[in-house]
Length: 487
Image (cartoon, rainbow, N blue to C red):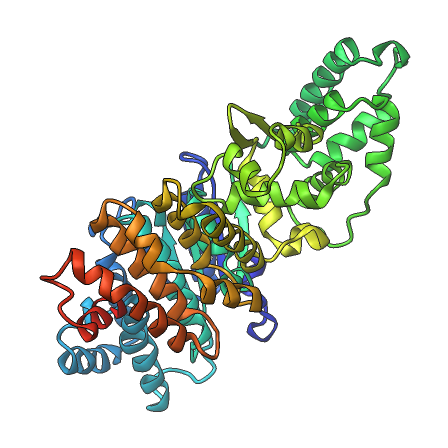
């Protein structure tokens, strides 16, 4: 509630993303916040995809919210009716356009006519179960549209969004402009009363004392009662804190008692939030790595990597086979690497890495990460892609990162050197590859370069002659190819 009820002038984030596994209570949490907001006089409009009669169709989102706005603000329906009469196809427009024309602009007109108080400044929109809506692309587009809405919003509006933490949603919420306006709150069923946390902690420590390589050096009375009390207090009922700490002590070769003392002394929580102690534990675990930066890059590869396996990553980085396994072996409390796959033990660790307010100096800018991966795939295609398959796979990986990469000088140089027509000629099936090439052109066009349009046209000219050979019935002219790839 502090996030909603703070002074709008002091508002840092306009989106609260509440995520967790099915059955963890996300909807109940969202309804509770909505009810408390209404009790505090804050207007709430909601779209609960699990129970709403509109089902999972995103097309009903704005219409459902508009209906709630009109019932709450008398006189608003007049302005909304005018907007619909002026554009009968308004509900087929983008979410951003619908919000602007059917909610923001009518609300502004209502305020100008003194039909609502000019002091009215805050409302909350709840979208519960975003991951139940249509498909992955639609869900990601909704997030991006909401971000655009908030950047150009004439009134203070907050969005509470709930969903499972699926990879495509994690990536969408991690893009630079969206992450700056988002607070992430993981929720699960991994909370227990303090007495049960104490039992779990004692059981874990007892097992550690019987299995650790330095078990003979541990005193029978370890850990003392005051230390257990301190750990229970730090856990704040969070099972994950206890399980991660015990895993970390168990996998470490250091003396468990001394290691635990170092862990507890290595951090002081200044700004408390529900995951302060867990975040401090994550930071400590990462600090024990002998190569923190490479470990962080590997972990971000897991989060942002898209289509590549551990083998692909080692090839991409020109690393010896087994290097990834070796680097991550020091972080077994939070990640494992088996069967060519990196697995994070809990989604909260990814949340920690993606949230700069939680991981601090360990944070890596998503746009920079994608730019680095995009450069590597450009290099792979230049060095190997033109004379060995599968070119289409490499282009797919390249596109995944290029769409989200920061527009750096190095990326610009790689785009200039890239020969899209050669990659197209060597790829198959052609009907799939032409879609990839169109996506490549679109990614260039939307990058923040001064000459983005010129780069786009240059690559379009490269592609036209060769595409015309395979699809003469569609690509009859350069202008038609330009039109099709521009849409």
